[in-house]
Amino acid sequence: ADRGIVPEYECFDMGMAVTAAELSATARPAPGMMHLVLGVIGGAPARVEMIAVFARLVPAGVPWMVTAIGRHNFPMMAVTLALGGHIRTGLEDVVYVEPGEYAQTNAQLVRRARALCEAAGRPVASPSQAREILGIDA
Image (cartoon, rainbow, N blue to C red; front, side):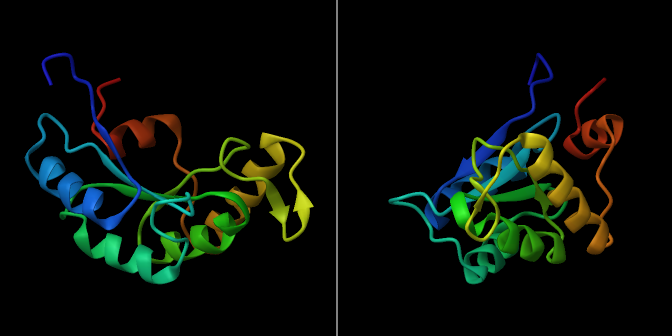
């Protein structure tokens, strides 16, 4: 907090999400971002119900996002955007650009995610808007 570092709470199951909600509710100067990661072996499955439960756990004013690993990512992105969360993409997490079609580049995945954001009426944040969302001083 003294150095202005804003936490990210990466949650792989709902127990971790409950703890993250408690921590983020009291974090200063900014609450940080709660991040649900779905589809990892041993963690929460990539299902709509998981995102809905997670969204209800997030304290008011705390930004949140969901990443679904592998083939689940784009449908889970659509649900996340519809519920007010944020998304991310990249070859680190996503292997398919379409069902059965491997992504070749990060740019290919970013274009698809951007189109999804625009279709959902949730334009992509600029760097300054992202800093504001996260409570990060420029």
